Every structure is written in C-alpha cells, then in structure tokens.
Image (cartoon, rainbow, N blue to C red; front, side, top):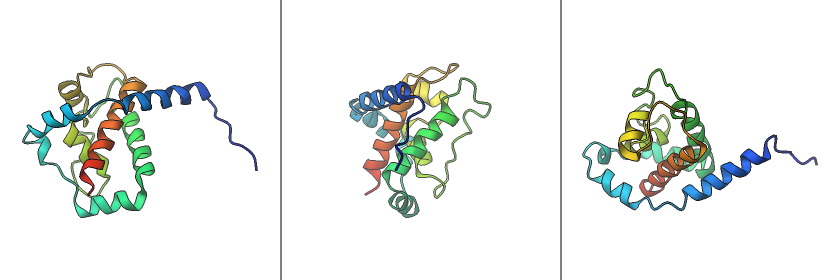
Length: 142
C-alpha cells in the first residue's frame, strides 16, 4: 500500500501547532460573558442536532466546522456578512454554536472576540474560532 504524501507539510505542521495552541486557551471567561447575554444564551441543541453530531462523529463535525470558518468567515470581504450563518436547527449544529458563541459573522467576532473586520482571518484565529465552537458543542451535546 502506498503512503499518502502531504502536498504542503509545513502548512499542515503550522495548522496543527495553531490548533494545539488554541486548545490551551481557557474559554471559561468567554462562556461566562456569553451566559450574561439573553440572545447568546438562548441557543441550544435540539434532539435532531444531537443525533446529527452522534451520527457524524466529532472528527467530521470539527472538519466541517473548520471548512465553514475558512469559507464563510475567514475571507477579508464577505458579501453577505451578518447573514451567512443560518439560525435554524437541523441543518448543521455548528451553525447554532456559531450564534451562541458570537462566531457567526465578522461583526460578532469583533464584538465578542476582538477579531477585527476588514482583513482575512489568520490560521491561528481560525483555529481559535473552531475551538470555541467545538467546546460549546461538547458542553451542550449531553
């Protein structure tokens, strides 16, 4: 069997490093602030969302979340910014988590996370946002 080679091993190594660094950030202060927001604290996972997560598995959910962040939040200019993240249940549970955590658009990222609009997100910022969303999902999937 042939071994699959990485096309850009340096980028993969940096991405892994950024992900590991993001995972060391204490998110408790953020979640305490979010809990004080009536709007942010109103989001929850319903049975269909939880079943979706269980059926796909955490690895696939995280992979999809990374792709969503890269395509819907990371670009410098987002034509439909503020409207790019659906709020309905049953589509993709990380969308609900994005709203719950203030990671749904560039305006909310600036307000809740101090990540400015008008420029492309760094890989480190994308790793952080993915970590925030995944942590919210883990806390709310029970």
